Length: 613
Ligand code: GCB
Image (cartoon, rainbow, N blue to C red; front, side, top):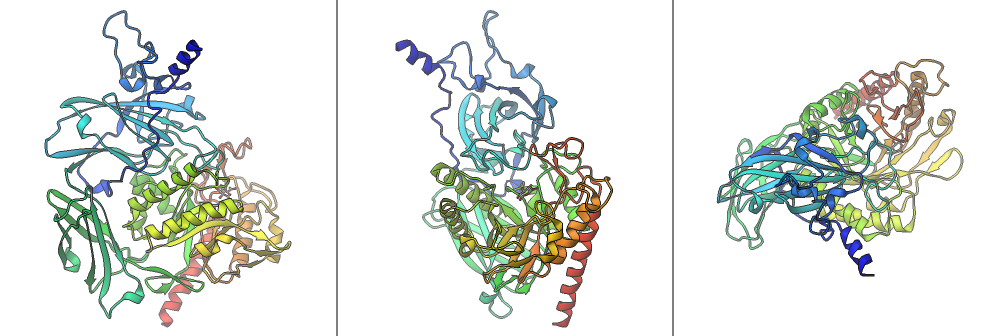
């Protein structure tokens, strides 16, 4: 018995007691702070059996990898050495950087050394833009945090662990799919593993601005030509009496406020001659914040978004959202996208298509992408990876979703272009799902009432050709969005006979429709995988959808072919979902021109309407 107990102890992982600490507040707007990049080459060790996770005190000849141990004497046995291991680029997924890791799902350890010279009156925050999926972080051998979730930022104050001179950060990333995760076991995109976004050391004073929000109040709260902007800010600690100065020079705003006992300030600004942000005129204002030694800059746009009956109003005017869905994948052959250039490339294609809206599916995309979309004039739908068959009754799963929601909102609440928080995609109906999603929707609304809430629903058909949308979540969302695949998962010849009924007085977005085609494969329009098949599918769908009462926008599936392990048809799919309007190499398919033509006509119609006013 004793032996059994002893051997059980040997397999306890070093950080077993550290459950995920996703509660650590986010330091917002890191891209405009004083930072030192830890991007670049990191050594890595693939650890299929979690060998590196065991504490050397329990398994003396194993030495947890987080210790970065080195033999002290010639006879010392240490069976790993980061410095002799290969390296890869961070940020970057491991799947496209090492052929052996293309299909790998499991643990990889990463190590990076850096030199540092601490200064007594500053704090250092170690920031990760994202790592997919379950991450442990160690600095100089000490465990500093455990984060779960693959698409949101997290950070740790590591000041007290840093030494003058050489320092080591070691990160364990595990991307095994698990039933209780968000997303869960099955999803239709590549499970890119690794440290997929920036790693930065953020330099801040001991008291610093943690987050803030500037939001234009709705049309109804407009007082003559004066517009009202709500401003709120919180420091990293609850200290009263700190002076915070906000200035927006172009609007002649300069305000000084004192923090309350919680380290917060809030006020409503009155501004005149405000130029609103819109896709046609994506105006951003320089905003400066100062609190003691902390100074922070941002570029912020102001707009309102509301619904009126079945219309979406941007700045008080009805708008048709000419959208497209996008995965966060590089335009040249795949791999996780992670920089402005990657985003710009994809968004330029969306511009060419005539879009004013993008659905960043199916998880929060990186901050560069959201900001680039804002500069280029794209409205954005931002989404949580609550996808398909989530473990609805698991409290930990709900908390995970809630953390991802909080982090998505905390990072992007000042982006004028985000108009929709989407809380889920194609979730099969059940009372458990309704309970989970309604709680999530309420939380989203409580966090941010300056945007619309939606989710991609499924249609439950009443009879063969008559589709009636019925979803108990209708009362929790502002916009009714649903995916439909007439022409792909159902016969394209059905399209002209189909009628759609959305029995709710809310705007409608078709969040997905589309079908696959292999670029360059031509043939008859009833021949699957030809560009002609996809072209016809788009023609039929557009004609069908245009008749839906309250149609306020569409985000067809999808801009570009993307990698997915579910898509195994040899010679055609080759692990790509082929529903792109562009191939993975950037070749336009015929359906691109059909959608562009429709969007051109929608744009002209809205311009004519505006002229008539
Ligand atoms: C869907 C999903 C999307 C898939 C798509 C497809 O409904 O929302 O993630 O990739 O269908 O291609 O089947």
